[in-house]
Length: 255
Length: 255
Image 1: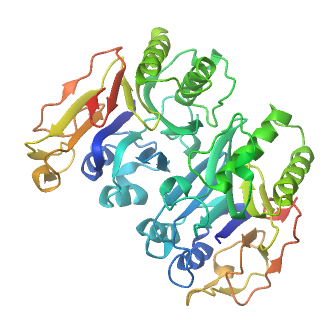
Image 2 (image 1 turned 180 degrees about the horizontal axis):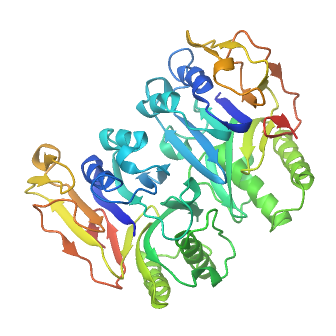
């Protein structure tokens, strides 16, 4: 299985600390060695880094863990290949443009039979179940809403329906998705969440001997939510997200 | 104006040397300081790096110029903003998926009136003329060919028609485009090309005191074509590409 990492914050925030922990799971503290990727939103722009090499030893991952890129929404993924070869084209997160917005998706799990679902507008470049599921979801959204619906609720409701549908076939569907405005999270088996806000304290990584005092890095009004397949720190109160519920995060809180 | 850099090769080749020269034009030897980007194809996969900061002082550009990413097709761009703010969303190259292929586009010039052209499937995320032109071209291709046409010629002919059309409105349209199979180049004012093949020799950058002996880096069967807005080396025979002609490069040669 793969591992997911997401962040939603009310101010542009760097993810260096959390990413440092995650990247060690790509070859050091765990076996997710089949590539990694990360997408940072900066306004409506989005920049991605992908590498089919293990994150624990990747030069690019090393840069990302040391170089502060400030973003309000981040999606990252480290891969343990189950479907699809180990190569760049199968490396999450996947990106598509729809409605003039960048959509980013990363998935952990398996989706038997997913490739039987027909696609129209969006097509996978690689051969993972995950990218097929992403294209299918976008197709469904675009068919229902050729233009963005008014208000957040309509889209969240449709996404709840689509994610339930994908999970319903007996698959494992843990995912992070963003349309550049919100971060959506859904899981059938495992996703944890942690919200950091004032009073900030010290956090210590599980996967590395690294601690950070967020008091020194933040303002008192900052709200930063981190979502991960398993907790990344050993001294904070991570909570499991409920299964089969679509969570919508905006500015660090559940919208 | 911006500057373009492209590469087409018959074997995966790194572009560190050429990119080292180009990145210095983003603040050291020239004034293209409004961001830069690069896209590397690896098979049908594509990885991009974008940075709204000047390339000459960018930490990420420094990594790219030292870290060997081997690719048969590369498109890069350094920006001097004329239309659209300096931010990530306006940073070339732009990427879209069509027919399950990654399409990459970078442009130098200006296209008056381009935003009056209606779009259907593809929409810009930023507000440059360039991204609008890219979306319009893809829309036209998709409308004509909902699925990829057989043979290379049909697509090249359509691209010649579309690029002529865009250039026809009195604009400046120098561009590099790839559909992951070919590298397309078109210019109305300035693009130079250089093909390196055996016997390889030494090349010396114009923008830096840096030389490389390609004999030591290559095999005798390698063919590597580099395309740039202005020559990058001062001891090789760069040639100007003809204006208003669509060139199609595959495996380092004109197809």
